Image (tube, rainbow, N blue to C red; front, top):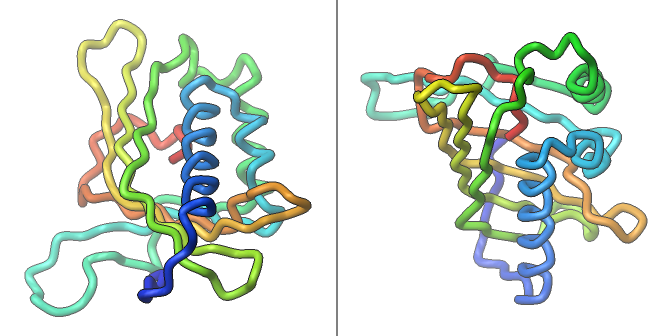
Length: 175
């Protein structure tokens, strides 16, 4: 999904409101408030991360859109979230320490009057147990943010990693 960012601007109040929404989302994730994070998603969300490859070609994308690390729905994300609150979530025992840094937020009107195309950069860092090695993923997110019953919700998210080879132990995190 390549979101189009024409010259159409949104007002500074809307830009600030959506920026604060994304910062709030990062706070929830960093503080392991996964159910509250899940509540920020629309029922029809598509949450995906296509593969990035290294290619010798000068033309074309290096994103393999028909292959993904994950492509999830609200129901599959709910299953992952519920599991994090059980004793079988060994990947989070002890809890990881994580930070989501969100920058370069651009907001443009979407296809519908209640939707906005939002592009942002992310930097995710995680430390596990007493390991000295930090894990990180950096990249770009392409979101569709929708107003539902007066609340902002994430209707779609495509996560585009900068790395062609991910150096994290697993993809149990939410980006």
